[in-house]
Amino acid sequence: MTQKIDLITEPVRLLFEMTREDNPRLYDDLIRFKKGTKRVNRLRFLAHEGLLAQNWMLVTAVGAAAQVVTAALPASSKVNPAIAGHVVQAFDAPAGDGED
Image 1 (cartoon, rainbow, N blue to C red):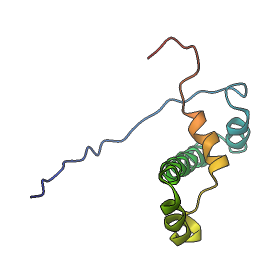
Image 2: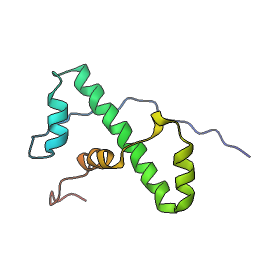
Image 3: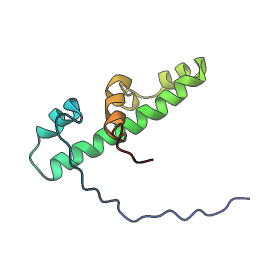
Image 4: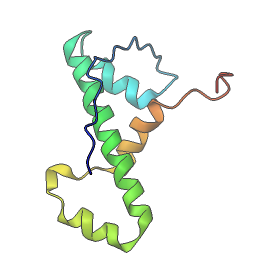
């Protein structure tokens, strides 16, 4: 028996501020673009790639079966885990901010 799942389709809005000290690599990448759509799209792309890499890293933790799965993916789906790790780190909460 399948149930219909209602998905929330409201947009997510973010006010995002960072300095170079927060994450130099991400800052340098984003600062290349003027304020606006290009910068937002770049951040969106990096976040998407980070999510793909995070899922990919979970799959590789399973073991040898993951190598077969990732080898079968088209080249456009493969993600560099080193780069993606920086993206994931950019969205982590700052250490010692006092929030849980």
